[in-house]
Image (cartoon, rainbow, N blue to C red; front, side, top):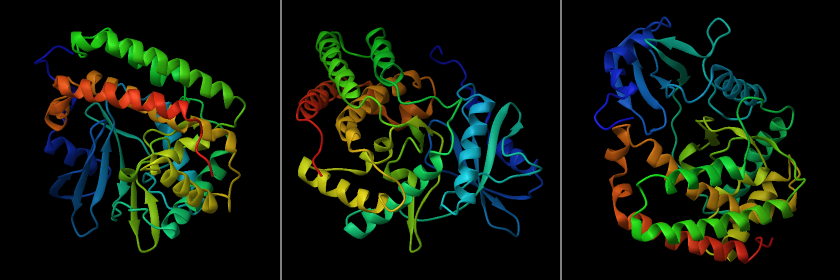
Length: 328
């Protein structure tokens, strides 16, 4: 998209948001609150004499209707199994609706706080939750949502960045050489884990996508669900030095094992998956820069300092992969 050209979300005005929700039979009190989302646009919409709803407007041309249907079907399947996720509301057998060229869905509003996961009890609780999700995820495969792949998450984003003007010229050679070494190491790690099972995953299981109440955790977004190894939904909940991450993972798996079996061969993938996410994230920001929300939210991405720090972080990842898998 050329600089200054209109973005599709420019048309998503408050009047369009309200009209879309009201097209489903609700009457809005015209109070709108934008929620924290950049890939899509998500709003809390007040309803007269009722609880506010959450309306999610999908980014145009990102997902096919069939892929969104798989996301919604997975959420409804999890909810039917009494797993605490927030599924889309169903009207006349439908969960995806269209208004003024935007595909959208509506959800109940459910509050909560981001989890600290600072105690063994909380980690085991989260582990039980993820074990239940993966138990359901094993029942069938996604056909439209894709899977964890080095090419899609690492090689293609890297090639895109090297072919663009984002990486400062004095850092391009270092980035090209470093990411080539990283991709070789990642391929070797995936070869070591060859044969591990793939299940339907949440796919983006970080604390920002989890809300915690006195009743425990619940997920509010399955937008990135896909096929992959179970560790993909576990590693993003780990932080700190290796010893601390090993302890945290052991607690998660203690809860997880009540409902699903974890294949320890997947441990070798933790730092490789982290590295793929880092490379993919940089390319995601670059590809979305034509969306005005991105320069406003991530102004540091346009600074050379970002790429200097990124190269340092990726060098640390190369060392982390070389250290081998976490120990339980």
